[in-house]
Image (cartoon, rainbow, N blue to C red):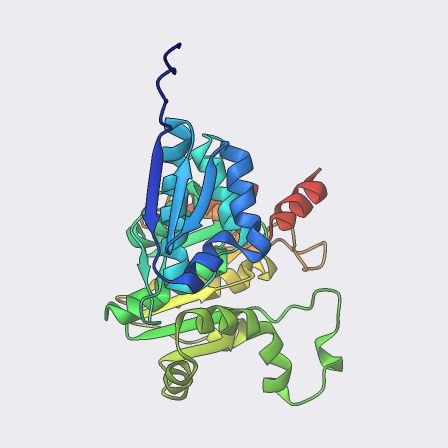
Length: 318
């Protein structure tokens, strides 16, 4: 009787998850994250006894293990995992995108840390740490506003600043501000809403409300910045592509002692009249060689919204 060939054992990895709810977040709705990772890396994945078991080629098992460990961390911190995160982690694992490694940004929500998701975003965060003024351009969804607000919250938490000031120009995107109902504050609120949404991602509502009432967090239109000097503040100008050259000069000269400024915008979405030069475009040219002024240009690879946003941006660029 012929001897049976020796059984070859496949490389295997096990990740203890414990929490079944977290396991559901890692695998995604109807296991779509799980299927995507299986198909992309050619590994076998199963869940037993509140643990993830991975079988397959040694290098594929190693890469899949790193992805599932990161997804477990994200699920533990945030309670859910977005599909674009899985797509990005797979791209890094397959060498299609460089890994972005950077210290996490500590915000006020318990256990919440924010980590740049691309090399461009990591460079943006580092530029904010290294400079008193940073100008950033990039497409929708590349994290310009969100990361700037996160850095402001982290600076306030670390007592590096005493105040956060969020500023936007009140420029209509094809619609007339005058036709909106309500008083001036009611007309301005829609322009400041994206900044408030970002803050709510990082602070409990009651805490944010208290900081706003105490004027520690201030949200104002650009026109109200004239004549002020802001010391020990983290100041963010959002949608800066819609400032004029004179408005940008006025804003930049509000910088006081112990303060930081981040100025961000998308230069492909300028709503100024065609005969007006964007203050952001002009400032990036003028301040290019000024020490202490950093400049960052984010691109399509830095978009972290729904994966269709990246395709939409590319379609319009073409």
